[in-house]
Length: 136
Image (cartoon, rainbow, N blue to C red; front, side, top):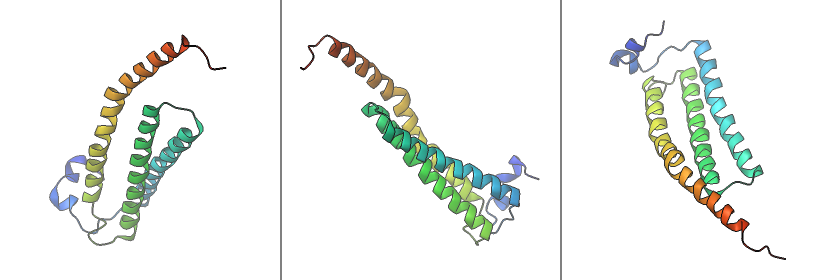
């Protein structure tokens, strides 16, 4: 049975060929597959919609994050399924979570700090353009 306390014990975390239940493999495949599907969906949305430059940049960053981390996650699942010595260790999942957190931090910072200011500027520009004469 999984215990979060036992997970971070070095003997458990650094076991070189851990046994993984088939249900765990399926759940991990679904999760990492969903990351890829959402990333590709964001890319399709970006290509089909007319968006502001900052929105396009934000969607591109999320696409990169989700597809890359999904592919790395599927690689981790495959290595665990095959029980490859050293490469199937549980510590790779911890490293994956750390890498995900480090990568998503600047994206969220951009989304929460830069994007609202850019949205405000875009709205002001649209308001200003409304009063300019139209081209004939």
